[in-house]
Length: 218
Image (cartoon, rainbow, N blue to C red; front, side, top):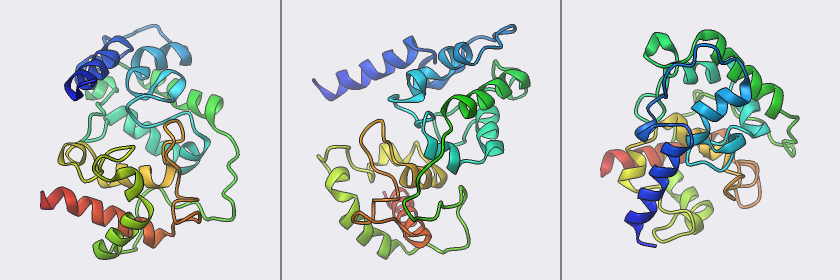
C-alpha cells in the first residue's frame, strides 16, 4: 500500500474510534461515569481498544502503570502534553471531561490494568529524568547497537531520527518509550534492550539526549 494511503487510513481509523482528527476531544459527556464508556469514547481512537494496539502510547500495561506516577497520569489527561498530539481533556483546559470523569479514567486504568511486574533484577527507572547528564556520543553508540536493527531507515519499526516523528514527541515521551517499550507492537522494554540486559539510568539518559539532539540538528 502506498505510504499516503496508509497515513490516510490511520487518520480515518482514529476519527472513527473516538478522537476527531489531530486528537481533538469529542463533545462533552455530562452524565457518563463508566470507565469502559469514557475510555472507548475519548481515548481508544489514539490508545487502542482496551488501551493497546493504537497509534498512541500503550496504557493497558503493568510496566507503564508502575512507571508513571498516578498524579502524572492524571496531569497528562487533564492538561495534555505540549509538543505532541495529546490534547487536554479537562473542561478547565477546554476539554470535555469533568474532574470526576478524569478520576474514573485514572482509577479505572489502575483497577483494570495495573498488575505486579517482574523487573528481572533490574531497578525501575524514575518517571522523570534524574540528575544523570546524557552523553549524545555514547547514546548514538547505544542506539546503533541496541536499536538500529528495528529503527534503521527501512527497518521494521521505522527511523526514530525522522524529523516528522521527532517533531511530535518530547524528551519525556522518548524516555517513556525506551523504558516501557511497546509490547503490543513487539518493541521490548528497558529490561532487555541492552543486548538482553537492562539499560541503566545513564544509558537511558544517553539515548534520550542523542535522539533529542537529532531533532535539533535537522
